[in-house]
Image 1 (cartoon, rainbow, N blue to C red):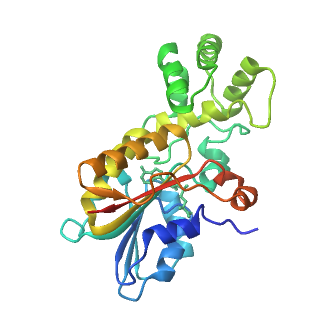
Image 2: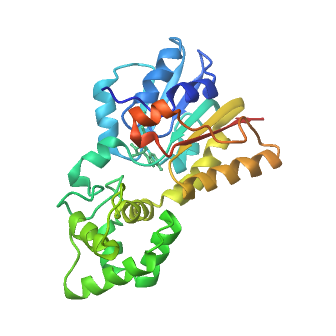
Length: 288
Ligand SMILES: C[S@@+](CC[C@H](N)C(=O)[O-])C[C@H]1O[C@@H](n2cnc3c(N)ncnc32)[C@H](O)[C@@H]1O
């Protein structure tokens, strides 16, 4: 089965594409949403695709050859600094948060707990902080905070203790070593691997995802034209909270109008066909 971008029809409806407009896909990833946006633009339309992962951009450049598409290696936190966009405003911004299937499946990147790859988890290989550094050098308290704050991990204290105990004997080098440590705290495994939350929390910390999201939302509002749409898909509660409160506060300040007060979630069919869409929540606002 071909991979289908998450909430595609719903995103397209919310973006309400103007055919000659300028759009920003702030997380171009595999380019799935981008292709759909391009298919609705006229020859005069423009799509700017951003990603902090250079490999994602290279893959998209190979796959989508379209002169209306401009690709930039940029953290979306800085989208208000896109060259040439300091004067012109855009008609829509899409942020489809988190990691892509390509990143998860590329063992060498260190996102997957079944791999013997070094603990890395950087989306942008130019940045310096890695999961290895957090696991092997941060204090027990800080690790516990990361696990609880970014993934609501109920056994955060026990896992952090186990990590600190283990690293006193020898460094924790690979994804599998860390996953096994988490497993040893849980003993039993259910439908979801017990290390899922630990890996999610570390990834968020390594990539400073919450800070980037907060800055990215502000930057998006800066570049949106009046009537322009901001669509954000989040995948876990720490992210969704940020998006929800940002849109609510922006509405109170008269900057945005929320299009949907309740988040839009995938249909049962989409969840069945694409399990990674399970936790997706789409929220959208229109610039006033
Ligand atoms: C879920 S994927 C996007 C999938 C895409 N919508 C598609 O249809 O293929 C998320 C992408 O966003 C990128 N990303 C995450 N945080 C980012 C940030 N702060 N700035 C730019 N790109 C980011 C990741 O590198 C990844 O490629």
